[in-house]
Length: 162
Image 1 (tube, helix red, strand yellow):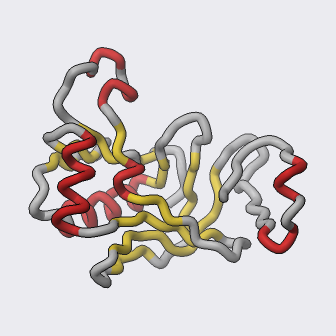
Image 2 (tube, rainbow, N blue to C red; image 1 turned 30 degrees about the vertical axis):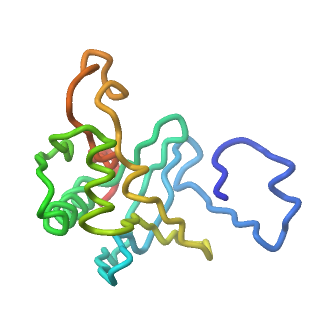
């Protein structure tokens, strides 16, 4: 389990599994990583092996990464999920079907997909299923309610360090 945010006394009870990651500054949720990428159950493994700043915003189901990292990750998604219709822009990856349909299609055509990040100073590698990173358009903007599309919850952060 990964907990983000304020003090939690229960989090200290299992000291063998306790990990502390320092944020890059005291006023940001940004943490330093040294590797990130995608894995699946067929042996596909593609990753970025450079120091990066990753922002995990606890209030939203998104991951913000520097622009260059976003471009690399979005390119990996575009190239690996070649059988799935999508639009990749400088700001987002958008699929042309509902999140439920895309999640099922990813599972059917590509098996279990996971996004992972290896953090500096930590000894664990959290994995997030790609299906859990699918964002309904109405969550991004209420005006998008009813749209038959889905967004990947990894977005560029132009303020983050590449």
